[in-house]
Image (cartoon, rainbow, N blue to C red):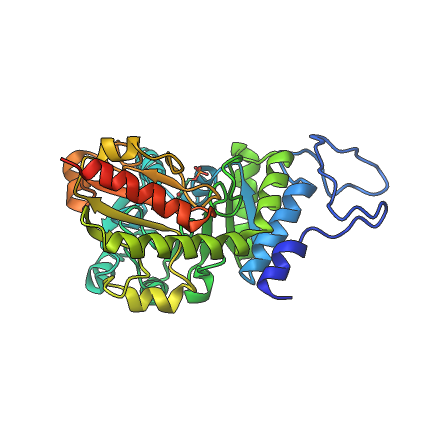
Length: 378
Ligand SMILES: *Cc1c(COP(=O)(O)O)cnc(C)c1O
């Protein structure tokens, strides 16, 4: 079975008893215990059949053996950090997702040091990988500047030193990039984004090949309680079935918007891995099947005026779903990052991030260009 067929079929086998082509949603929180045959299911903070269907599908998409789903991307991230012991260090890319930064600060309170490194600098990565490093945390493309990390190179360096690598693959999603193929140990997802795809449910997932990690993640989930409800798993799995179709249309729309913005007099630097002038265009092309639905740019007009003029794009955080969104990192996703750190990373006040949805590209172009012209008028 190929990728697009797995999206629709794996973990969604028709029910042998009733013939339902969509498996029933198992909402029970407790399961009867029969003396003669002890049940697979016991209590829903542990395992749940609806979650398991989603897990089978997510694992199969990356040809992986295991997947564990969580109540959110944050809960999935917390399960990964729980692998570390006090005194160990974590090496991470220098611009991580804001929520991940908050998780790292929590880990620091438990004696886990965090070192941010520019993962596009090979010698800096090699220098950072000391004996006390227990984990490397990568995002690629990064948020909101769409920097691209060479997964094969960085995972190779980590492997030589016996350091586990987790890749937060939320931005690209499994349809465009599969980190395990390039040597990562764990793919992490906020399924809230492109996997569920409709901005109506939160979820997270870890995908990997290691039986020991599977036990650790399941035990962490059952203990801390970051387990997704059956109805949430149902919604995530329903959204997942159209991932390839949605992603293809979103990439097409992102490309059309980027092409138009290149010629717009009010647009400065444009960040998108699909542009030939992107510093890591070759790397992106090698490890991603398409450059994704998210891009960002520096706007030379009045940002508030421009964003206020949008009619179709919602000014909102999040990304990867059917509806087109725009956000201003400096005052929204990255508002909690101290200004000097933010500016050092290149997240300037005039930066605008766009997540292309599946609407008609002509409507999106009209809406965005009208707004940018409006904000650019004297
Ligand atoms: C949204 C997001 C998360 C966190 O996921 P939640 O589902 O919101 O908890 C983590 N990483 C990235 C890159 C994200 O975009």
